[in-house]
Image (cartoon, rainbow, N blue to C red; front, top):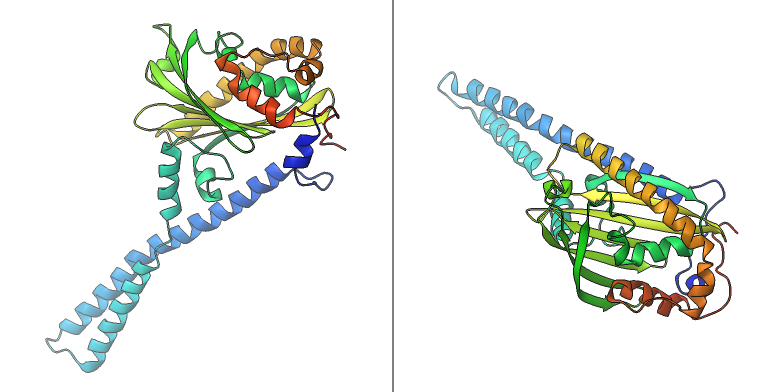
Length: 313
């Protein structure tokens, strides 16, 4: 595989023993806790200020006469109460996130940390004994939704590729899918025919954005990082703005992610045995529309003949 991946999109070096994904998650947990704490204090303050303002008003009007001191106290209490209302924690980031999520794009570099954490559902991490290129080819080949995942997706079919746009470091492809089976459980989540987005953000990150209903989406971020020539680290991050109970949704998504990965294993094993690196260098892949995004990957990162620099080195 070409060394252009490292030259053009080299990932930052990591300190041994550290995991940037986990570190970021811890930072987000702390930030969200602080934000929730401030919001809670603000809500508690409202009845407290109302009680104080009501108490001062009743005391001022009890004797039928308002002294200048009482007027000053009422004015001061009212001023601080209005100031407290003005200090409401800012939730504009969440509102902005809802808009970006409905547009079907949720790469972590394109949305704030708070919004991502709010919509984050599950994370899974694996070390798989297959070359990194096997995973990339699998993720970017649309036909694998019909073949490799025919059981979990219950005969989902791809109707056509409706849009393809190369980018400087990847590309975007949109394709229509249909639920061919009348008893497909996915009908609970989505309409029979929807347009799905698949985005190659960089050599290591692929995003799958699936519309559900009422402009809600389920978005899956895949990270595939090469460790050695024959193994890679695989991350699955799922986000959604569905108004389902979060614990229930997390259980369903964990089960779905595990099932699809289980389906991947035999195919990835067979793919590894075909010496995919040689096919990659010779560009011996189909020119079908379903592989347009992978062909874009080959154009960007498959020109050279040097081996990929390993993440673990």
